[in-house]
Amino acid sequence: MTPDFPKSGDKSVSMVGIVSFLFLTFAWSWGFWGSKILLEMGVVEGVPVLPNLGAFGPTVAAVLLIAYANGFDGVRRLASRAIQFDYPRRWLLVALLLPPAIVGGALAVAVATGTTPTFPWAGQPIVLAIAFVWILLLGGPVQEEFGWRGYLLDPLQERLTPLGGGLAVGLIWAIWHLPLFYIQSATIYYQNPFLGFAVSITLLSVLMTWVYNSTNGSLLPVLLMHTSWNWAQGMFPILESDPASLAMVGFLAAATILVVVYTGPKRLGRLGNVSRPE
Image (cartoon, rainbow, N blue to C red; front, side, top):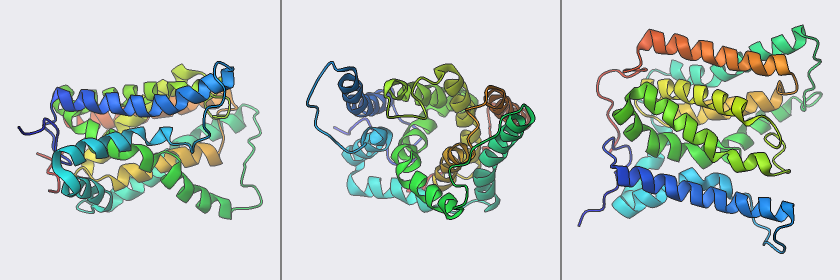
């Protein structure tokens, strides 16, 4: 019997594949994060000290499901999409520069409203480059994007339109982060407003769907865009300013509306049928 899971990049993923991906992703990540929450609350003691593996949930789930269905060749095809270049190179600039532009606009609002930003790299600009590479490899993108965009996005946007798929992935992506808001050591999340985070990451997901569809389903641009977003917020902190935080959401919303109006919710960057490397 043929397993009911997709090839790498196959758009026709069944509901079994979608549900299996979500179950594995949340079980892996929330399992690691949940044990840390219980430990910090004093509910349990003696939990083994493990590396921060929880963030790898989406990529681990995608690799396991694709390997089950297609073996090493399927995993290789998934990985090869991270070095896929069959699209105009200008999209790499869009992926790299759009997040800093949005964060930079919010930073300007922070300064204009009386907040003096603090920069963690002040006096050591080399930290900017080091941080970008570290974030790419261990700060979210590689740990997540082979799952969110590499596995989940296509079947959802086929069922819900590209706009609906982007919104759905964004909402799932936000909820997946929820345990981090209860972990004291996760300082960028702990005790911060979840609603604002959920709105911003869902809007970001729509923009990433636009970039993904415009680059023939390559994972390199979304890996870079995810990295650039995390990097910009880490290197140019704005969350310490409420006006800047609101402005960031506003700029994200404005960019998302412009993209949706320009491309249409049923296309969102698609040029005909998007093919995937086999």
